[in-house]
Image (tube, rainbow, N blue to C red; front, side):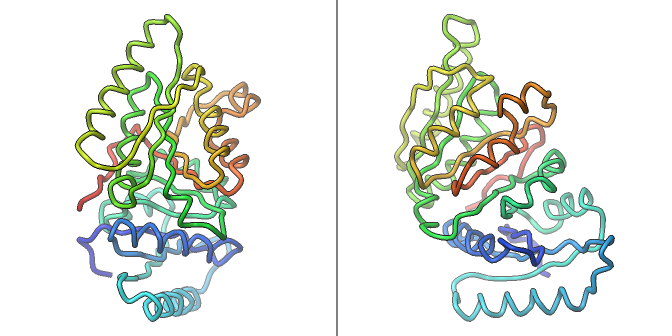
Length: 270
C-alpha cells in the first residue's frame, strides 16, 4: 500500500457492527478529504487465514470504489502485536483516526495510550450525517482540553459543525483561572476560522465534567463527544461512571472520540 497520504482507518474484524464502522469511516474520509483504509489485525489465537481475510477486504474496497469514485479506498492486513501495529499505522501509514464499533471498545481502549491518533467509537446506523454536525468538547483546567478542541476544529472547518465548548466550573478555586485561560486560547484559535461554536456553562467541576458532557451530548440526540483517555482510573471512577468505557457504554448512538493527549498525535494536513 502506498504511503505518504493521511488516511482514515476502519477496524475490520468481520463481526457485527463492521459495516456500520465502514459507513462512518467513509463519511469522515469524505468530510476531511482523506483516503479510507480498511484495516484487519490477524488474531493469532484464531489461526486466521490471511488469504480469506484479504479476499474479504479486497471485495469490500472494490464495492466502495464502485459506489464512491471520489474516495481512494485501500486495505491493510497486519500480523503482529497490537502495540506494534498501532505504532506502524501512525509512523508508516499516516493514520489520522481509527474508526471502530463500540463493541470493540473493551479490547481497543487499553491500547489508546500507545496510539498517536484518536479512536472514534460508533454505533449509529441512521442519521449518520447529523452526528458530525454537532460536536461537544469538555473544557476544564487540564491542558488536554486544547487537544480535544483542536481535533473538533477539523470537523468544524470542513463540515461546518457546531462545536459546543462544555465549560467546567471550579467555583472560586484557583483552577478556575486555568479554565478561563484554556477557554480563551481555544476561542482565539477558533476565531481564525468561520465555523460556529458556543460556550455551554456546565456548573460542574472538572473531575465530573466528562460525565456531565455526556449528558449534554445525549440531549442533542445526534452528536459526537470528544474526550481524553485517562489511563489511570480508580475503582471510584468506575463506580461513578467517569471512565471512558462507562461513557461509551452509556452513549447510545452518539459517536465518541477518545484522544490520547499524553502523546503527540498527528495533526490534520489540509
